[in-house]
Amino acid sequence: MKKKIDAFDYAKEITKVTAKGILITTKADKVNTMTVGWSSLGVEWNRQIFTIYVRESRFTHEQLEKNPEFTVNIPMGDFDKSILGKVGTKTGWKLDKIEENGLTLEEPEVISVPGIKEFPLTLECKVLYKKTQPLNEINIDPEFMEHEYPHAVDDKYAVLNNSPHTEYIAEIVAAYIIE
Ligand SMILES: Cc1cc2nc3c(=O)[nH]c(=O)nc-3n(C[C@H](O)[C@H](O)[C@H](O)COP(=O)(O)O)c2cc1C
Image (tube, rainbow, N blue to C red; front, side, top):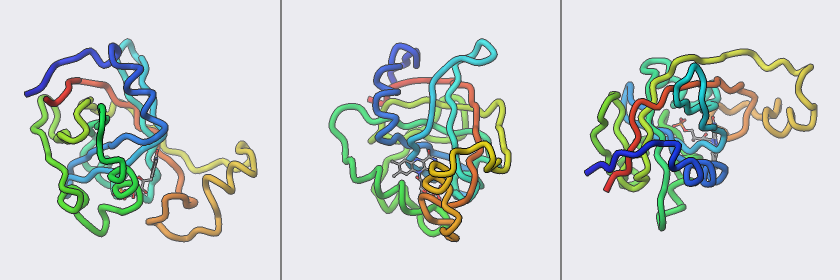
């Protein structure tokens, strides 16, 4: 069962947990989910928008390039917080994180990507616009640059590496709570 909602009525629930981590699920080669901490809820082109920032090195990035749709999966109440760490450090390049973490998929309403029952507040999103650009180091505070985009880390699986983020600006085309 899905309880339809207006995402903006849940703005507080969505944005308060964002810094701690929410999940972004994609579907192309397979269904995959990863933790994101950078995101925002807002309005652009008079539409409800959810924006995410995904490093080019992520499996999620590869999936979004093949199928530019995703679900945002937000916890409500008690949940297993260790999942955020597990899907936020292990990569879909190497394993099936849905199966590994016993996550239950929920049929989507509008897009092709499922939700996750254990993270019930769900936004179905279609990418409208993406911004890709190489890092312009002259414009970044050097300390911040070294912390967020360390030159020394030559590992595409590392949480922090030198890979730049692509900004995906997506329209929220359905919003609900999985009950
Ligand atoms: C709390 C937390 C927040 C994160 N936020 C982001 C983010 O906003 N963007 C990003 O590209 N990676 C972020 N990561 C790292 C990815 O979740 C991690 O590299 C993951 O293994 C990528 O999975 P994938 O290769 O299957 O896509 C975050 C990790 C954690 C633990």
